[in-house]
Image (cartoon, rainbow, N blue to C red; front, side, top):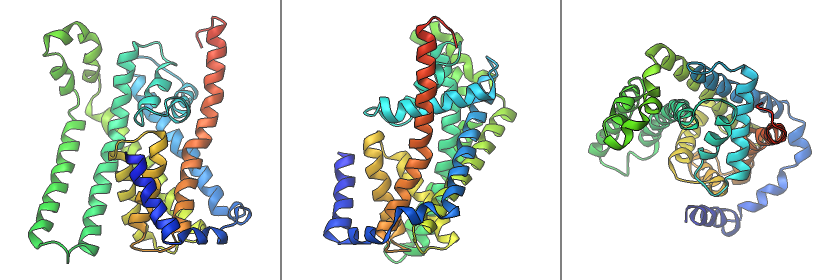
Length: 314
């Protein structure tokens, strides 16, 4: 359903609206010759390197792993999520890819992964909700009452408070999971959250903020590469909202492409009518940040399967 709706939106914009003609002005050879494009590729390495560092910090509480192994885990997760489990919700494949490289109980490893994922979701929600607040007051204020504006401010403040309160008190989750009788037998597994103090959680959260800044910068740079005429401020308002929509709308690897394109056009159209450039930038970001790392993950996964098939642990 989500894929169908997003594709219909894109069809209406590109075909019915005639925006497809703009693709004639985009030449791959010219894009590849632009230094900013290769800067985005370099930022991709930093992006996933930061994610690997987060994973290493979290897993090291139970099992020391090298930074190289952390990178293998993260990239294998991208591969499985993108090319193997294409019909399951986004992110679930990443869990499967990461846990195969650790000796930990697999459920415990998955719970550890969820801490890093929630930190990244928290940053996306906080920045995205704040950006939407700025966006609303800039473009929607005349359409809604002043009272609605106050409700929106209250909602954003509440979202920020709940996310921060829950994340920095995530050890409470172990206490909650230990209450039901049918879960008590798994106490050694569900108690995993007790091992993460505020200092470590703060480190992971800061890394998530830096990583978020990296892929926001990537998208803005790609918009410029593709000839989308927006300012840095406009990009810093629209891009976080687009990422928030991509995060909260349930999707898999297939429907994510539709959601990504539809959200990008909808919000960036407030600043630019270059639909072809917007879509090109959105899908270039997907290719650089997901497809290329997924190929690298496929190599690591193939090596793992080969060694595992020959009786090797690693």
